Length: 68
Image (cartoon, rainbow, N blue to C red; front, top):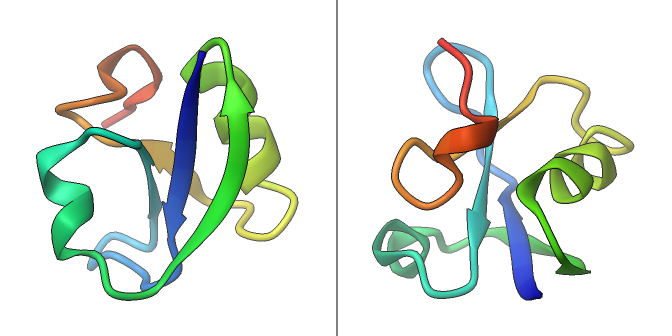
């Protein structure tokens, strides 16, 4: 289980990235929303999509949920 966050700032491709608590790139995210404690990134993405329908997993910390 891990805590997940979604970047409230939109990426250039329209995505809102979802990060695991220990992700290096999360430290650069100033505006983020806590998604809760999840066993996989799949449930964290589902939670993020309630607010940001175009959410995507971070390539580095949630690669199994990252889509091109």
